[in-house]
Length: 339
Image (cartoon, rainbow, N blue to C red; front, side, top):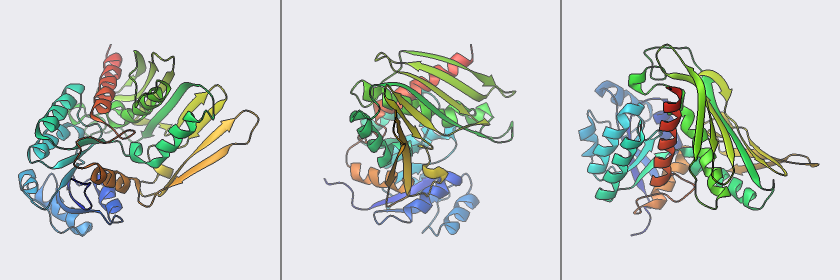
């Protein structure tokens, strides 16, 4: 069976990311959103009207019974991901699940086991891993443009008002920076560590953490130091009450590569270009820009279409083992902060 030429999507969730996904797919000739379900019938209907979708569903069961739906994008709050993805897998719909795929490694293991048993595609939606800028970066590192790679620094944090009932601060809603955005810098460090070890990714042998947990118990800013068997080290920071930035830097013996915002190209989810800068001793910085025909969410959705009927995406997109390793690292990071 060849890769899907056309893929019809349903969206679970009606928040900002769900809207960005639908908007991006509006530029795709191969992927189309045809249904949506929200936390209420009214939210689903309003979302469908806003984005001119053919229909909305009153319940998740109704959406999964839609025979025109080939794939489901799970864009609900973190604690809902596992149950909703499991339901979609049981309905034999391909699943693209927003990060974090679940709230802990045990949940990720359950999802992977279900996808394997049902023979259903499953991918964690770290959209930056689908952007060709990542392959360009790895190619430049393989060419030795900055020499042997020794260290990574990666950050993803922003400042919003502390709202004890909001999902970013309420532990019952999966609050805290590590679960919300910490997976980005950790996955980047593991990706670069894999490059150093000639593998798709590598796991840290040691992880030390520091940070601050606010009055709700959620981590509001957190840093981890990761050490890999290859000798590579990494420092990663995330925050929801502190604007620590959105950059990543790869340090080599002959220079460094700076990515101003690898997670969201140009800080705009609809942008069609991403860039990084190569700094080498004695030379002017070289700007490398990679353009795409679709916004990153569209690139991600079309990658899913390309992958079918396979069950996993190829690296540098998130494979099952990659997602599980990343979640285990996040579990360790959170546990270190609770000591």
